[in-house]
Image (tube, rainbow, N blue to C red; front, side):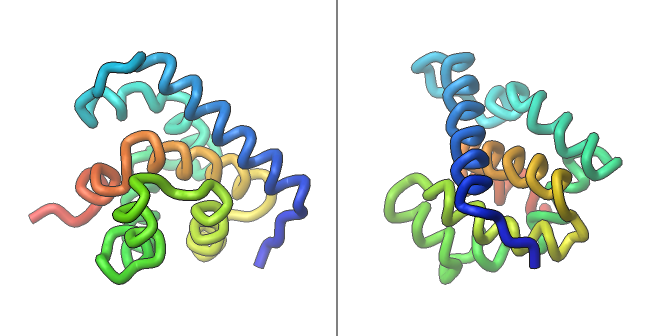
Length: 138
């Protein structure tokens, strides 16, 4: 299991905050429909595609399958946190997502860039929108 140093965790959390701030400044104060929010995620989708050599959407669907118990189901740790606070803690999300992404075969710098991208996407569009968008559709 890849362990990050405290400095790496701080740098990744700072990068997540910077990207979220940038996305929020793009959308202003207006509440955007989730489709509009997703359209803003160009940098994150590009990071995922570059690191994984596959389209971001198909990778995010794999990520969803691996993370859904924690993120999208009512007894999941991150789901409960999101439901209670309407937000996730960067470090908590990074810890959980890092395990999932490592399980999907990512390591090193690729793991770090995809980790930042995925956390930003989930926090920007919201857990429910993420689970609806990338989850199993009937």
